[in-house]
Length: 366
Ligand SMILES: Cc1cc2nc3c(=O)[nH]c(=O)nc-3n(C[C@H](O)[C@H](O)[C@H](O)COP(=O)(O)O)c2cc1C
Image 1 (cartoon, rainbow, N blue to C red):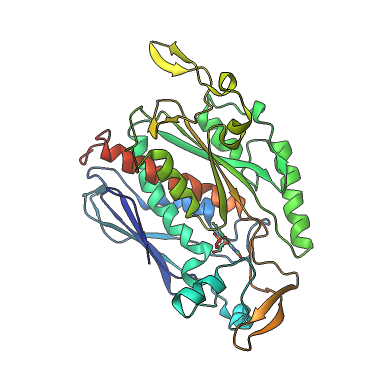
Image 2: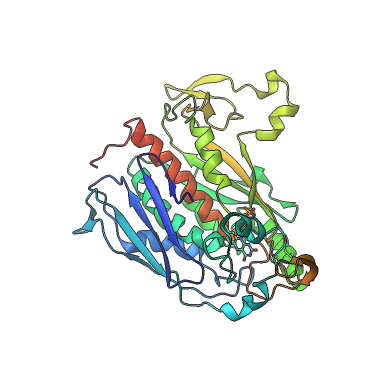
């Protein structure tokens, strides 16, 4: 089993959805970084369940406890261990899942591989594991902020309702972040956000779920990050994003749209802006040849509709080896997208921090 991500900046996550706690260990964090539990808590609060009417009803405070790696308010370069206690488990809701496998969840595949599953919400493969990534990612973001690198993600589409990208003002990131957090779906287009919220509520009423697209952008990333041939930063970002449960597609820059363009439309012409080499467009999403080119890194991920829905579905009883029907009564997100926004930011931060350490753009001692 693989529970560690990263080469120099390593995140190891542990714990199950219905165990006493979940947590992570960050190894390779530079020393001298000012770090408080609040730095981590801010992002955990954006991911935590029970935060609004469009998320799961499970109400976890997701309080981060830092157990090691900090002395007198600064990182020491030693492993940082973070624990988040599980406080609102309700295993009774999962009793019917002892022998029934949930369609499009990981139950069947996991059972085939390991011989058994934690039927109480999936245990290790529950979306709950992503809280620990957010904790590790918050530290990575803090490290990146020392280099003025900033990561912002938002909801681009839910249930086929897209945002008007022309109205996004990327020049003031503080304002942009506030706007994204001003609605329940984390969208920078308040009008589209209302329609998305409605689509989620409607799906919930119908005992169903919806999916969507998240866009994540990293600003002020220096040119030169990425280790071709096999550790291209684009490849590492793709892997990072595809490890997020429910993520089914990944794009960089113009992504799939590039396949429909001519070279003359797709090529990013070089130009000098304030004495710096930049490109007029950014269809490459800030990465060429697997190496950053100094333009913002732009990526997108598609999340499928939540697999656990209350509507009746066909499945099998694996004990009886017979066809059966399933109705999932646990507390689930009718749409995962709003809570996955900070998870995407965290995974992007982990990758960029790791590569910045590899190229020496960030030192071991801050
Ligand atoms: C923040 C977050 C919350 C999630 N919550 C749920 C949930 O309530 N119900 C569910 O079926 N899946 C949920 N998932 C997705 C499942 O964990 C995922 O679909 C499942 O493990 C199967 O993996 P796959 O979809 O990547 O194939 C969540 C994912 C994330 C990132």
